[in-house]
Length: 282
Image 1 (cartoon, rainbow, N blue to C red):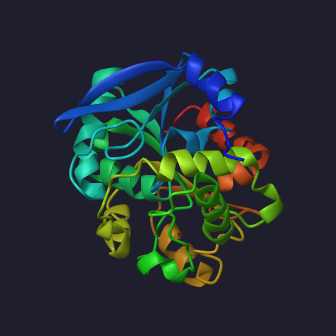
Image 2 (spheres, rainbow, N blue to C red; image 1 turned 30 degrees about the vertical axis):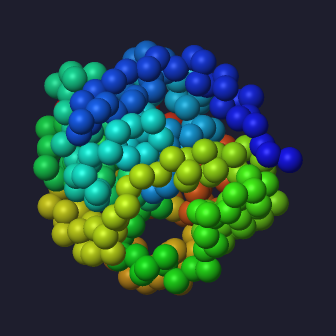
């Protein structure tokens, strides 16, 4: 069968406040929930706001206003450029328009972690804290050397769903049993709306060069079994620790790349106490 949009997606979508900011020739779509101090969540490549499905409600219940853009060229947002650096200004301007001039906490996942670092480097006054989730510390190899299957050109929607499930198992999850129908639906909805044709910046040293020059409070969360990192900890850990503003690194056990979904309870238990603390630098 073809998976319908899951009920939990429909419910969160129905309670979101939609906001719009400029993005190229069109608009960037933001979804916001709750009230209180704001936290901006930046999704990963081939993603959308749905990358944070299992983290929104706990943040709202903890008293935070959660704002998530579909990044330029993803989800419901217009295209603006063709690489991560082209997203910096639209997102920073959108944050200022929606949230004012006070520094915001940012949580960036995968490609969103690189974007968060670029924003913190170019718009220092906009970022209070930055949590790097599965950060792209080292340049990615083409397709990360992984045997991902092509879904484009497959007419049968059931076959496409099967390919999306297989790709989740290859790249995003450690435990295949954790790949539920909701995850497959998210992957399908998000990947099939991805219009960013070039993401070459993730294959460069852009993360490291910009990361070394930012000084906001930072922390990092990674899945211990992330296929992109688990053989490279000896390189990744020293780079992350080289910036004195990094407060801690948490490796969540039995989790792959999409750590905030696969081990959502563990991830939320790590995220919330850090965000709820008063910033050491105002």
